[in-house]
Length: 279
Image (cartoon, rainbow, N blue to C red; front, side, top):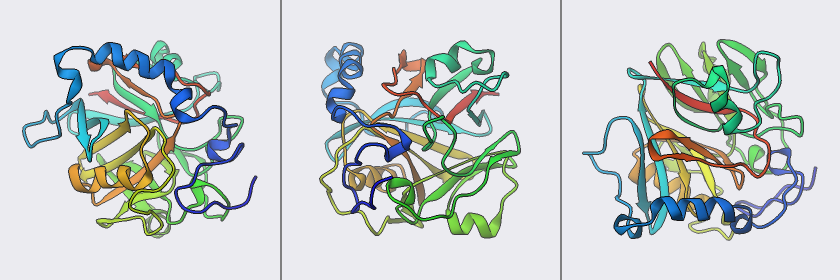
């Protein structure tokens, strides 16, 4: 592992997600960007609509915030179950959205995206709970990289409700989670941006994250172009109305959104995956 980083700076090799970094984000996502451009071609491609009160209660849509393009997926837990996937029935990590979609476990997916940081063997760096079983304990250790940019946090589903809590708060409350994934840093904490984010930091990456609008309304977002931590956090706070939101990962971020005809190809294997499944 390398030395700790200043806030919102690019990660060196072998730190972010425990995976070696190669080309800059724009190059790493060149093939993906071409696919998105083809899907988005037409009169509506120039200006994607911003989120409004009239937006559908569930599903994925295009959004624009501060001039940057995003895909936002909102799910009502009364209509959809939010769950986590990591490995198949033989214990082999899925490793990609395509593998999960093709597997029996991936039936009826309304959305899926990578769900937090992981090691070389694709095991989670922090807390991971699947079907009520804690597969990896809460990680409160210090270290370099985005995961350890405190406060970090946990996204969880418990008793039909969802939440995002700073790691210390989660450790105190210990909700009886059916599903939980730990990542970092927090994007929004009780309505405030992470204290280490600058207004517009120098690091630009494709980023994805999750926030909670209410106990039964969960919103996921992925940037469709490289953005800073500050810009991504403001999307969740200012446009999506999330008092708490968590960064899941960057650069390798990928989305499966069947309603949009989109399944991103990951340039590196994926660890945990979060998904919405129709009830």
